[in-house]
Image (cartoon, rainbow, N blue to C red; front, side):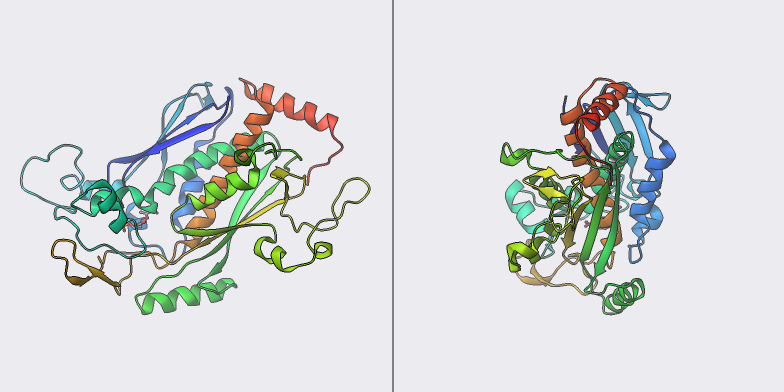
Length: 363
Ligand code: EPS
């Protein structure tokens, strides 16, 4: 069995949904813990008023009984409260009655940096909304719910994953980051930034050098670049390693197999090497500006300004939670690939047997 994750859902549709397959039976889930991650994703400084509308919480439709997985597909739902303002505009069926609420008029002003332009061209849409709704980072909510499930599985193996923001708009300290967001907001602009995810308790040998798609760093890069607005991913000392000599770039091995440093960020040849995993993701500034960028009205072909809607100033703190979930999902997937088992006890036993075979102490 390998873990599988499929999601669906539009930003202002009724709900976001996820189906998780391949989870072992008997894994205990805690609703409060999943909801706590959903709230963390919403709480960052600089989020839009949309976050006051949404109070995300998970619903489980299948695959769980009395808080334990059944070994069958787990179906998760996160509802969009804002949908109540879009019941005409985002109706799945031709709506009845007069247009009312939001989303009743076609959007024809594509935002540079969003899915808007290429999305309508690719799918032959005549309303940019048909592209932006799914491209929106709103659907990261259900990925965070899936990540919380992955973290519960990893915890059974003594593995912890945590994300945090390290840079917003070029600023690093907490006060400086807030000041940068206040300044950008005053100028009706937006900011990007950098987040870091660390994971402890990873035994050596998750992932494989056997083929490209099995490499842990390839999977992490794909998972993190799959998050809206992420433009670069770095493992360990990453880009900086290219500027150093070999003697300054690797992590020497000491008796007892500990490393003298962790420049590799816990990954060598596409496998965990037993050290802490350190991975960073960089996000570009959000493309919805209150001071709109130049664009073209697709209805007339004339120069115009891009769509202005309510917007976050920055969503880097949210990205820290979303990136944590993405890394947790990939690690859980590799743990299930390596240790297998239909029941959580089988997975834990295989992990324990592996740790008995190799000389490694958790770090
Ligand atoms: C987003 C635009 C904004 C954000 C949204 C992502 O939505 P709206 O246009 O409804 O204000 O608030 O993020 C979320 C709703 C969320 O829960 O993170 C976009 O265009 O990507």
